[in-house]
Length: 51
Length: 243
Image 1 (tube, rainbow over the protein chains, first blue to last red):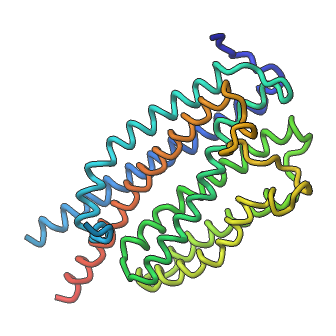
Image 2 (tube, chains in turn blue, orange; image 1 turned 90 degrees about the vertical axis):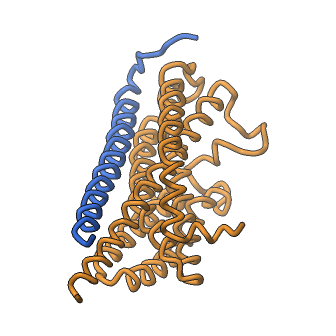
Image 3 (cartoon, chains in turn blue, red; image 1 turned 180 degrees about the vertical axis):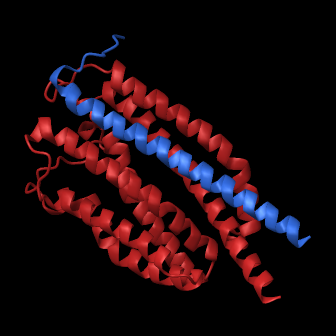
């Protein structure tokens, strides 16, 4: 199996497409994980206060 | 055992808490393998050249863009009919993820279209339907955010979601409906083996699709868990304010 890294003239289209893919996936996971951690922390604090 | 028991938030939190880490690892592993294989290890396409490598992200993101909308519609109907608020929260959680995949499908489609069709964009029925569906995603997210009462927000957003279903259907079937009058090609994957892309592209594409779906499900569960917690927080804050 040969590894292809030279995309020729089409590299100008391929790399931005994969860049957008990376940015969107990293962004989605970062946003999902950080909002989840924030909500969990707030809820734990609130439950502790109410106990 | 009834499926409706998962509509109970506590049961949903218990099951999703156990499943999410596995889905995340599985989804991301399949994603790296499928996308990496497709990008670096598949041969140059005889007709489209290297630009065909965009297929490994364009096709799965377009599939998810449409199917996420269908999932939101089903969850909205369940929410409206059975009044399970977890259904509304699943639809709410899916919307930003679906919008992100729709944006990715539009961006990668334009980047694939430029070298293949000679244009970034055409007002083709399929492309236009996907763009309108994207606006419905944005409208749905905006409507949820604009209404303070979560029950009212769930109901009204569900109705808006159902209105937009026609564009999800058009996004999926425009090529077949406008037979021969669209620039966009027919689906790359088919149950009919002869219509499929050849095996050398098909296997990494399939792994990539599994990765996208795994990642989508893990993101959806993480977001729904967050929404359930936020709803509980809101209920507790209101109770505290009243007492």
